[in-house]
Structures are given as C-alpha cells and as structure tokens.
Image 1 (spheres, rainbow, N blue to C red):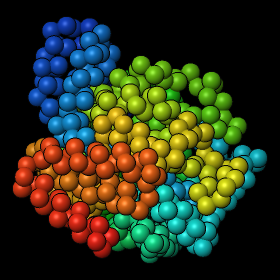
Image 2: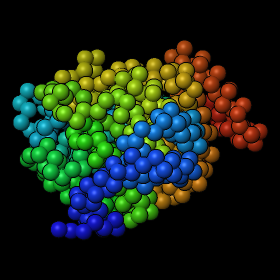
Image 3: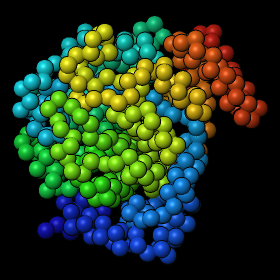
Image 4: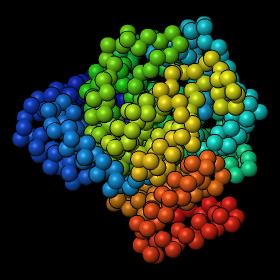
Length: 469
C-alpha cells in the first residue's frame, strides 16, 4: 500500500484513503476537546486559514455557529469586499459514455433526449447569454470521445471567444470537462481558457467506484489526479468541488481540504475556486435513495468553514440552490454565483427549454432579477474578468489575494462592470437602483481612487470601452 505523501502527484499518495480516515478520526476526537476548539477559533481569527483537521474538528464541534458565521463574513469582506461575481453555465452536449448513478446523462438512460450543438447553435446560445449581460461562462458537456472529442471542445472555445454581438463579448471561458490527458490540458491552456473545473463527486474511493460502475470515469486515480495534470500542463487556475450527498459530509470536507493543501504545496497555488453543489432531482434520479443527503444547517456551516479554511479561494454556489439558501450563503463567504442559468443543451436561445436538463434548478430568476437582488442586499454585482486579462493568475493571483490586496482591483472593476451592465442590459428598475449603488460605492473610496474610476466610467459612457484596473 502506498504511503501518504502530500507532495506526490499520485492520488494513492496525496489522497491516501488510510490517511483521510486517520485525519477524520483525529478531527472527531478533537471536536470534543474544548481547549483545542478554542485554540482553533483563535487561529481562525487570524484570517490565514486552517489545516484540514482543525477545520473538520470545528465542523463536528458544538462551536457557537453565530461566531463562525460572523468570522466567515468578515474574512470574505476582508479579502474580496462586497462584490459578487456572476456567471452562467453553457451545456454543449449531453452525450456521455459514463454510468454515474446520480446523473441523468448516464449511458443507460434511454429516455434522455441526446443533443450536441453545432457551432451555429452555439453562436445562438452565446448571443442569448450576451444579450442578458453575461461576460463569463462555464462550459459543460458529457464525456464521450466520439461525440465530444477535444477537437470539438477547442472549436467551440474558438467560436465562443469570437462572438461579438452588439455590446456583448465573453471575456472569460471556464471549462468543466471530464478528466483528460496532460496533452489535452496543454491544448486547453493554449486555447486561453480561464479556470479548469472538475468536481471530484466523492473522495471516498470505494464509494466512488460504486457510483461510477462503468466508463472512463470509473478510474478513481485518473480522475483525482486531473488537477495535477492540468497544472503541470500550464493551466494556472483550477476549481475543485464535491457533490455533497454522495458520501459522509465530514469525510468529503476533510478530503477536499487535503486536496486543496496538496495543490498549494506542490504548485504554489491552491484552488482558484471551490464549488459546493448538492444532489438535486433529475430525470430518473431519486435523491431520497441517497442516504447522505445534506441538511441546510450542515450545508451552510460547511460553506462558512470553507471560507475560514481557505480564505483565498473563490467560493461558488449555483442555481441548484434556492433563493433563500443562496441569500444565507452569501453572508457566509460565497463570492461567485450563477444567474439566469439553464442546465439543458440549447436552453438559452429558445422560449421552450429542451427536455434534456442535467438537474432541476431551484433559482429560476432572470439575470436582471439576480442583479437587482444582489444590490438590494448590499452587494456589487460584478462581471469583472480583469485578473484573467492582466495575467493575475495562479501563484501571482494567490500572492496578491493572500496579502489582502486583491480588493484594490475587485471593487473598482466591479463598479465599472456594473455600470457596463446598467448601460447596456438593465431594466429601468435595476438601472435606477444600480446608479444609486454606484454613487454610494464611489463615496466610500479615497479621492484619488474615486477620480481614476470616474475617468474610466466616463470612457465607458462615451465609447463603450471597459478599461479594467
């Protein structure tokens, strides 16, 4: 049996199952030790992050949840300010050769209508997204070497980046595709993707193999080592996530943090983002059959402790969750959300959404409604892609973020992109509230910073040009 090695790129070492179990047992024991818990809370207040065992002990303890929630919010505000980044998923194809038991795209589902978009159809979808106001999207598609080869992905990326419709353009394209080869990751890097995203689903190897009984995704090690191959290929920003509800939540939580620590130690940059999806009903999928379904209170505590444990990372919550849960999660450290989302192939450019969605959406509001809601709650909706365009990625981004300096870019760029949205896409109601928010946010800034932003806002108003910081 392989031994645990944080600095190895082999899953059997950095995600050694025996070590995960050992760490979890330690966390369970420490969770009952009040002296230990108090020391961890003291450390957490330094806003420098926590070790996986420390964070999991807090998760399993009876610590004052109000104190944890407040600390999570303070950390998010300290690192990122009050801006919330917006994006949307774009599903290209639901052909898949895997048999994941929790996903309706599985190969044995004969009732699911299969669809792969042509490049012309992709253009229609992207124009629909641009007309909403979106500037960044996450590319999604099933794993199928015949229908969805890497050549199709690369052609689609080229198509998407090349579409400039009215005032619209996709400035950052994140990619969520199945684990692939280092050579293919090099091709994705050359294609100038933003973040490469891959959910682990579950870190428990035995359960993982049971949930993925056939297809290339069955290979636990190959899947778990994907981020190592991606970062070795030059992709600087990667996004982690587990599908909460597939296995014991404490096991997933500690393993996720161990994975994040492995990437940071080996490549100098931990995950750029961590997503927190939960199981949702879908075609042929009965959520009640999964005994590890996550209740809301535990889910929210996990979000808060992720923010406390890895303060530098972007935390993402999607429209899988309801408006109510998303509103609570925003106060606990979430920094990126989707809005106006469709999880079907071809769902944006048609009045009747196709019957091929990957899962049911809980928050069905339009992007404009989400933008208004964010502002109502005191957040600046941000369509910023500045870091990607100015080479603030990977280690460079992390160095700035860990020094709590990323806010000097986040807030001004959020203000500029909100004004861009107001000028080009907002409803009258959203436009009115947006201009009020912009004035309030400008008044918070120093005269020098305010002056420089106003000049860029004037440029935006006169020419439509977005000049980022």
